[in-house]
Each structure stands twice: as structure tokens, then as C-alpha cells.
Length: 83
Image (cartoon, helix red, strand yellow):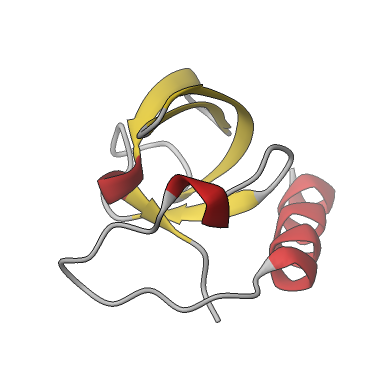
């Protein structure tokens, strides 16, 4: 589990390249598949607060994988990439 978390933080740090302002959803073009993002509200108390984007489902929704939870559909208002 520690190795997985270390990888996710490393991948997250390497791909984080834009800023997010509260109340403003990032444009869909700012997110891309295979990117780790930070969740504004984790799907459960026991899940991570990061998710790996798998593929874009619509203009403002992404299929993502959350460690200790599984697959979820996220609206662009529910996540951000840290600067």
C-alpha cells in the first residue's frame, strides 16, 4: 500500500501543471487520461482523496479509479490538479 501511495504522489507531482480556483471548474481539455487528480470530497471515509482519470465520458464527466473504493464517474467540479 505504501508503494502504491508513493507512486500515486510521484505521478501526481509529475503531471500537475495547472492551477485551480475555487468555484471554477477546469475545462475538460485541462484534464487527460492517466492523470492523478485530487478529489474535493472522497467517495467514502475510507477511500483516498486522489483518483486516476481513466477516460472522458462526456464534456464534463470522467471515469476514474479511486484507491480503496473503485471506479467512479466524476464531474469536473469534483476534482482538480494541484499546481
